[in-house]
Length: 255
Image (cartoon, rainbow, N blue to C red; front, side, top):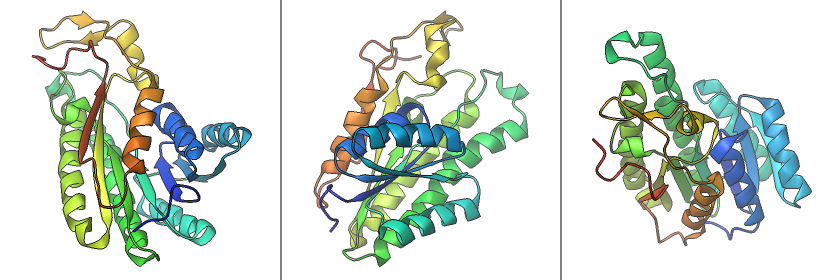
């Protein structure tokens, strides 16, 4: 079992901006001591400052989720300084340029897969190690999936493949963690307002028929509330998959 949210430790990757930053604020407000991980220290410090100003507990650790040593150092430092890992929000991710499939370079493919898939694996592996060893043992992992984990957008082969694979990793982690009190779930987000969704406000997002359309979005805070709900469940309960999306976005019936 894991301790109560008050004083529990949450690691959030990609915590310098967007969904990661807003979720870190929400988790801190819920009583977690949050560890903010990301590549840009200045962005992490900004999130940390906002949390501390609100009376929360936060610390920033620079981490590149594509680098095995960097990820190991992140979790070693967290355990050394805070004693345990109760929650991991695997949020770090990148998109890809709208490009015809045959024009996608291997380097572009490798970059997306390294961040969105290998990064999730590396962080999950280290979190599971910590969660098995700590006393009391157990914890929870929440993966940031995507609507693209179910239905692709045009010209997004690497991103779509990475997010479909995250779904498989969520299921495998939930299964492998079951005997150790480790729950794993996934939040699939549709059109949260972040730097990654700037194109949805103009010139619009490419649709399956080749047209472009300005799609509705939702505040990142709506996603953060959903993550906090998933994290708040008792150890014996788990949200395996949750979809949080703009009501009017073209997902149901896409294509």
